[in-house]
Length: 68
Image (cartoon, rainbow, N blue to C red):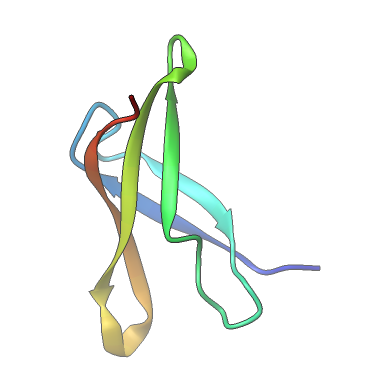
């Protein structure tokens, strides 16, 4: 069974929400998260992974813009 973690979304329409993602075999979450909009994937917002606190392995997803 894969481990999972909740990660904060920063910026964009989902600012302040969290998402639960599975960690890979190295204990890292996916590099990007596509937050679906009302129109599904066509209106998704793209978030990229960044370290919040490298020493404690905490992450957040920072908004980079809409999927086009």
